[in-house]
Length: 155
Image (cartoon, rainbow, N blue to C red; front, side):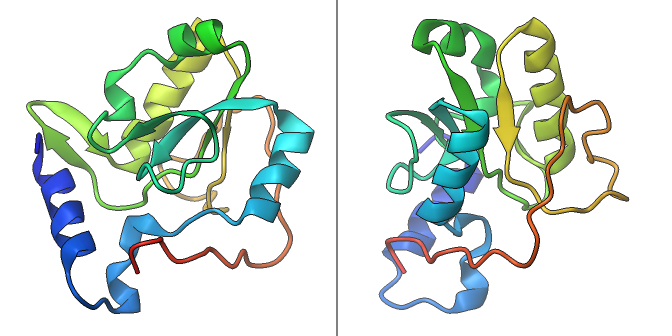
């Protein structure tokens, strides 16, 4: 196991029983939401944030891969499509000086990757007053109502 964040996820998954409050970053994007967004903004070929069991695309990054340590634009050039991300909202955490989580760092990396090329679509909460809110996004679409995210497979 390469970092504390991943170790904690493995420990959580291996527990014999779970409480809803423990799900944290592991809520799954409902298929109908994903396919709706994919129809409007896809085709998606890369899932940026997955636990491996909940990937929406054949190509993906897990927490162990650490999406923030990769050049998404190069990967998308190979795959010929767009990237989808339902990012983790946990507090920023690092491993060996490289951020793994933290919306500010995720959105900063997304902006840098967009500048290098590729299309990136994120399912994020409408928190327009947060410092991480993507003011430089090319397009923002709001989903009316509350999304009923799904429990992870291990729950």
